[in-house]
Length: 373
Image (cartoon, rainbow, N blue to C red; front, side):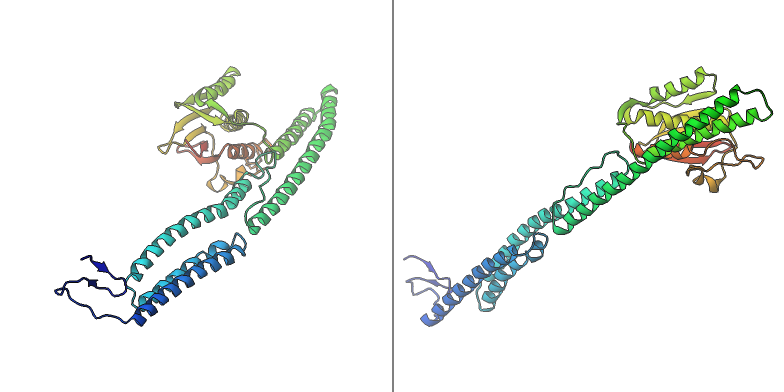
């Protein structure tokens, strides 16, 4: 005869008298158990339907907080079945929780990614603010909070850019207007008859011209840089700068070798090297440029000299605008005090840093350290 397994009786029933007979339940008990199963299954389905509709009523940014609500319904139903004696409830609970957990992890990962993307865009835009001449607007999407933050950032960046451009325009106009009378004064002094203060007056006028010119350059470099990065063979590029100095009889040399090409802003790098080399020549009469690559693949270009160096507590201060050092006699050295400040600004635009250190045996090392290899 055929073997029949009854889900509710939990015993094998056949026609053989040798089979062990279970204690049979009444038909009322079986009907009651079946009704209980159907009731809890129906309640679970209703719970899933209601919780799914309720979740849709909330904003997109809050729905992930209610995802667990769709799991609680069937779990409660299965636990109730288990308490009532259903042997299959435990396996159903484990399977349901595992599937629901994997689904929740996937949904959570998607939601977290969508939530963090506007924040990443905001951080990237904030990092670029003030470096490029053009203002890039953030897309105003995502949750209400992210869209509000993007709108506020766009308004702020446009306001800051507009104010800085107005100030740069004002400084440029001021530079043009003030250079005209300075030039006239210099020409008149040069054409005038010799008088005792003529040389000093010409030197002061040249200093004023350089101050105006470097001040405008510093103001422009602090906000706007139109130069794009270009692949450059670094050793050949530095050699061309050194040869320009050597052609004019300056004592400038180059040491070290480095292979490969890297992305730089050629005009900015040339300006940095000129400022650092001019400082070395001013204080020491000679400059040595070394190129090297550190063990962690950072490219370093250092301008070395054997001058008096800088006091340790002033190494950072000299890179601020209009800061000038004093000579041995206590008088300030010639210059405007913008060379190192401009070099530091331009280095930052190339994702590099300017590091000043005193050398053993005397002298100064001004190194440009690129962030990546």
